[in-house]
Image 1 (cartoon, one colour):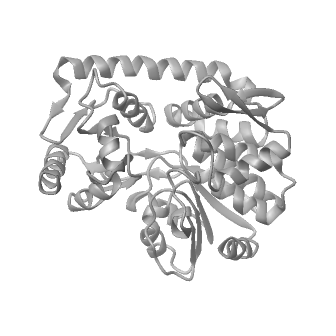
Image 2 (cartoon, one colour):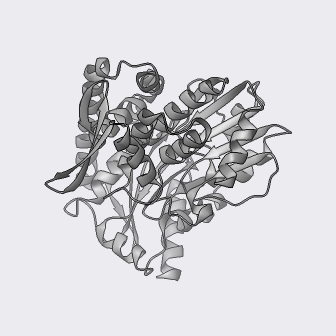
Image 3 (cartoon, one colour):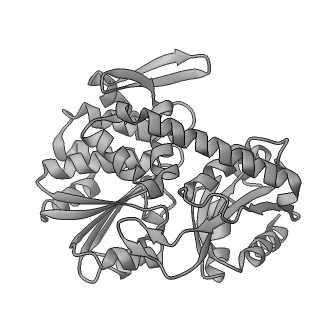
Length: 392
């Protein structure tokens, strides 16, 4: 791909980079692929894990003493903001979330959506990182292909599109197996000599990095993939998984006792500080779980789940604003309507409404997340319901 070669030439012009990545398994594997690749190319790399990218975090990032900023599994929806903060410096984005197109000589945005592929089906963030790595280093790095397969575990079903390139390379290197399971094709990855389901590894990395976001989890997960030691983290991962399950039970108790508020097209709840100390992706994981539970929520209504967002960004500093983190999901019946074009996709629905409240939203058609200023949550949800009443 011409744009990938252009990105490689850009990167080769620097001796260091700030690497900004997302806090789930896709973000961790994307970052691991890029750390290995950039170091092979002779760059020193400082990784920063972000839950959400927005204007305040971008201001903190732009204050860092780097001339090259690389965003993996994060950034495409905010490319205009990233460009505005560059001040003559350079940025590379390797992402699969719904992008904003922008023409900026100092910014390269490698996103499958910009090349005719689907970011929800055809490519994970880790796959985009792997395609960069494969072009830069050649196909001898099969273990990096295996990491891309792990990053793609968030995409349902058989791996196709651009993800199939990483899958093929991983199988060729003896690091990945495709086997028939009870529910169809299953992918096994050889990590530190042990074969495990790519979904199991993905779940582990997400628990460590997102639930453990304020406990140094992202760096532990990243080092486990770049330096080894994944097997030594099993006890901590088990603890975090149990903590997440405990919090899920508490949230279910909350909404079953009247915490779930319903409007005509939207259902929503806010857990306040119930998840304090855990990464904010936890509310998204809970929302995803609930979206498949018609006994707990309405399957035909948009689901919005919120928690208080912490102001400390590990490794960067403190933001000034006070926000609620919202995660939006399409339950099963609504997902079918969105897929057939009978209901608006989540990200495109919520992005303009969030902006009107001095917040933001980004993501995909069936799942998205964002930040809304504290105190305006109820009005925001009502505005969403009003907009849906006009379009449905």
